Length: 166
Image (cartoon, rainbow, N blue to C red; front, side):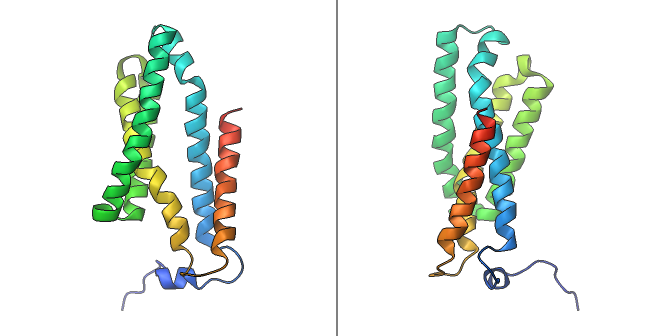
């Protein structure tokens, strides 16, 4: 008989204390995602003007379009998670696509910038709406500790945003 090392959702939800151990994984993942997201936002226009040779007006317009597409894709990522992939697979898919996008930009930013940023947009669209939903799944319906869990999770968002924007 094979014993699975993966915990069931019921086992995860039956934790002692204020926070399940899985919350710390989500906290850390989201903190680093926000660090990268806000860090990239802070230098994106500068990069496009200095390295890609765009005029500041054009770089600002592209920056705005990138931000709009990121938030538009969260709608699509949420639908895929609800209807097809589920929260966990969407989160993993989004994280991998974001990482690939960043690696592409790091590898050859002059020739592959738009391809890399497109991957980052798509990945973020799958990642952002699903990680918060996973926090809620760690708690049983009506568990009074859920608010504390979200509070800790959002602390990770704020830490990442603070460090990424520095």
